[in-house]
Amino acid sequence: MAVKTFKGGTHPPEKKDRTSGLPIERVRDVKSVVIPVNQHFGAPIKPLVIVGDMVKRGQKIADADGRMTVPVHASIAGIVKKIEPRLQSNNVEGLCIVIEAVAGDAANDVDDFLPPLDGLTCTKEEAMVRVREAGIVGMGGAGFPAHVKLAPSKPIAMVIANGAECEPYLTIDERAMIERAGDIVEGMAITMRLVGAPKGVIAVEENKEHTVEGIWKAISDKGHDMDITVELLKTKYPQGGEKMLITALTGKEVPSGGLPMDVGCVVQNIGTLVAIAEAFREGKPLIERGFTLTGAALVTPKNFIGPIGLLVSDIVATGAIEVLDEKLGRVVFGGPMMGVATPSYAIPVQKNTSGIVFMDKKEAAHYEEKACIRCGRCMRACSCRLSPALLNKAILGNDWADAEAIGLLDCIECGTCSFVCPARIQLVQRFRVGKQILRAKKLKEAQNAGK
Image (cartoon, rainbow, N blue to C red):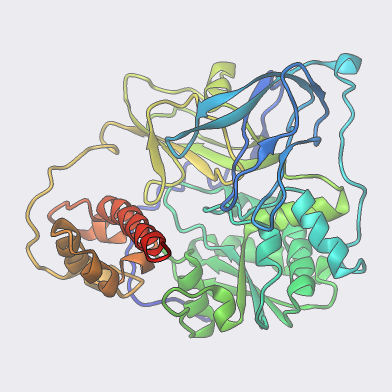
């Protein structure tokens, strides 16, 4: 099988060996959850419950009108104890619904799921409603509403299942491709039908080639005679970025400011496809997800599946994993390249939480930033073909017009430039803040122009 890739990128240490061979374990006996109300990219939603309400597992507890909204559901049966702001994995406080589990008949402990629906024979309108009502979002990163992505305004030639999992440390997608290959293929078939794509590709990096045989068998068993194939990708970061995947597989490049549908593609994360399959087969909303807990400050790293809103600190308290607090240097939600460092691990798992990395002090070492030496490594490594050194200069000089012209808004914040920089310049952090400033500046200019 030919191995495909893209130009640029880098090779950070993988550090996947501690969990890649470990099956997914279910977190049991969850006493409470803290469910963030807004876990998607788009318009905010509001609680549908009040303190004191009894809720069932799967019951819708927050929603709003609007195309760019996605509902949230109770991930356990219990009583709503609080509705208040709590710190979330993006390091920002947001409104959360706290549910305390109540066992047995006292909680009327029956799942409040949707009725099963055949995603390959129902109408497309029914299918789109199902995806939204199940609360499904992209589970690989930004949390984009899945029902919006599945209603493209342009013809789609290919659906790509993102099984690259190029972030170091994380192995939950790898395990899903081993343990849930049938659901991945089922979700792929439903997605292909919804967007009208004649072809589907499950993209896997070389370091996960051992998953391919099982995926091919699942395609034979669950592919519904659709044109679904497996493609191997070179193990390289950020191979799992949407634009990088599309370029590697099709040779096409998503235009600046464009979307995958502009080149006839839809990209879905492995976890999202599993959620789609469950939403149709079982009527199950997105109320739980898999994630990897790993890092050198853990004695027992593992792959887990648990309810949305589960506090990572509660997993530690059960003894399922052991944290070496004296060695702990940093807790990162997500992978070490694109994840967010948080002040504690008393933070809930969200729909887009793929892993939590407990770094020891060596892994979390902070280096002093030095002057740029004009070596050009950041430019060679940038998979978006930008000039990070020039962007950095423009931002430091508050030259926002130049920063936009160079391509600041096209940066995917993958962190490759920072990783390869010998001067240890915190480029990606500067670009992340710079994008916020530039967008705010453009919004203010637009508002002033409309007066």
